[in-house]
Length: 170
Image (cartoon, rainbow, N blue to C red; front, side):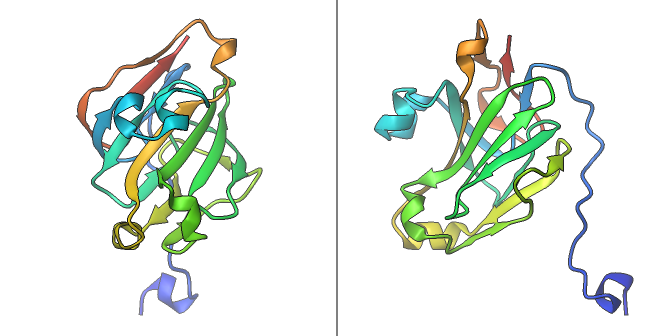
């Protein structure tokens, strides 16, 4: 019997050792990068919550896009707010209209106020549950305090892997 099973531990909170650069948001998930306009939701597509992009996910795990602190977790587990050590405030929102799922199909691995490292697992979602609810599983990544910066640029296009550079904030 393995150590983890002996102590009834299913996972650890370790993350890969990722060298991060200030002002950089790394992709929290693997998939295909799309523009906000392509998301097809008025609030996100029009940038009302801030600039950013979407990622049509090929995975079900969302990871921390930089070193920072968890500042908010939606009661319905579909969205997380995180602040970087250099002040970038980011919203990671899984799916479109997934708030109506009331947390079904979502598992959170972090808590409010927790310090996280880039690459640390934040949440898991079930693509089948999202599809069954007739929702999109696009992961929206937005800089919510962009008014403090001169530019927010998506530096990835097409297919990205988790931890690839996704956006730069200057």
